[in-house]
Image 1 (cartoon, rainbow, N blue to C red):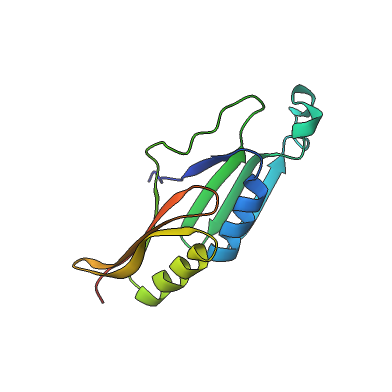
Image 2: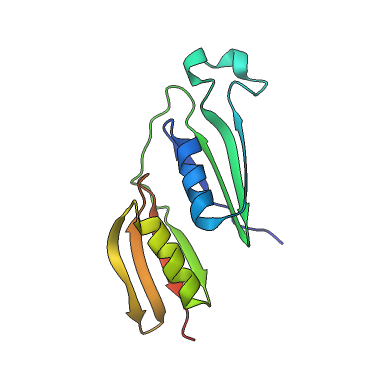
Amino acid sequence: MAQLVPYLNFAGNCREAMAFYQRCLGGKLSSMTYGESPMAGQVPAEHHNHVLHSMLAADGITLMASDLMPGAAMSHDGPVTLTLTSGDKDEIRALFNSFAASGKVTMPLDDAFFGLYGELTDQFGIKWLFQAGQN
């Protein structure tokens, strides 16, 4: 069965962002830089330490990311929002608090008619929704 895997792009701070997501979500993180890849000769030396591809695999979560190619423009105003859901309200509270510690809360985590819900933008400009169903 097909699986949706979010893929994020960063402007040189992919390694930092993915390490942060790993601290919040747990799991195994793997990365390859442009300099470690077969395309190293095609990329300016100042981009060799930037991340070509990174993948975080945590309990039921897969997140992929990379730094933009040299010369590419960054835009965080697109239609992508990441959502973390769980049947466990305590798990969602812990995740929300972990992300909120260095992000900007746009809607505090609170009970709603459909369960616990909150929104924030993390320190890297990515919008996240957190939702836990009624217990």
